[in-house]
Length: 322
View 1 (tube, rainbow, N blue to C red):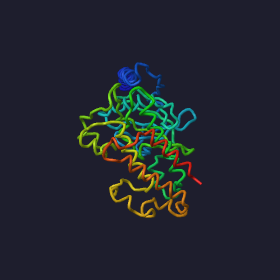
View 2 (view 1 turned 120 degrees about the vertical axis):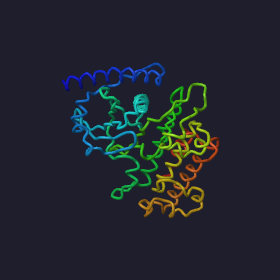
View 3 (view 1 turned 90 degrees about the vertical axis):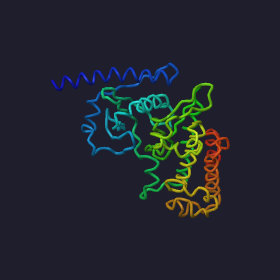
View 4 (view 1 turned 60 degrees about the horizontal axis):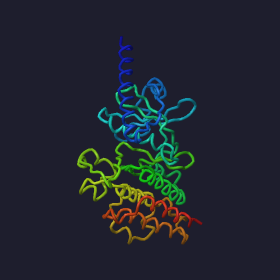
């Protein structure tokens, strides 16, 4: 009897979630839903040993990430641990599906609809997040790698802002939402709190800015904190903060007002200081990226560059590599 009841529950969840996913996809994809593969709960449960907590490799609200193996390939399984996160999961799924063709976005492989909250399945990115790589002491990221990853991440964000008639605002850009695959290619993810600007509009108002969104990176943006107004420039600010972390290895630029007056060897991440920043050309690159990060974090959003301009500037800076 228990087995039959569980089967009925999964069938009900499949129907309910399937309808909601279709509705979300139609809304986000301008009436053109994208086909998404479905995995059974049995498949995902088997590869995670019934979602054994010991096999969790990453935990960022509202998700637990598992590493699994299906059909001869390694995968990420992203499972919400909070039943109140249904809407965030639907948003994450729909936007991930819409963006999956971009090489710098973590590819959605499919989902499981048989649980109360949909489970997401992604391609595997074997080197972990950019935060993990910068924190690792055994294999420090070179300056060249940091610059390349910054430029490619910026390109992914500019794609969100410009590739569609309604710009997508990520709202939670940070090292924790940039995975790196085995080839060193950055993969943007984490679209649970993303917002879409309606056609003909320049911004959206986030009436919830005092509540759950305080856990996201956009809460650092000064004009967002004051007004709850979200534009493409909200992402630009967050990316500027991320650039500082890539440069320095520090978690947050609380020292930002005096940063520009510091000597280069007091700012740069110590693991790349030795030898790498002694050449004049590379030091010029560092200074140029630092100045770009400052512009991204201007208090007045009108003074910040667009992500397209940020990508172009990083490409120009990257060409100086000896």
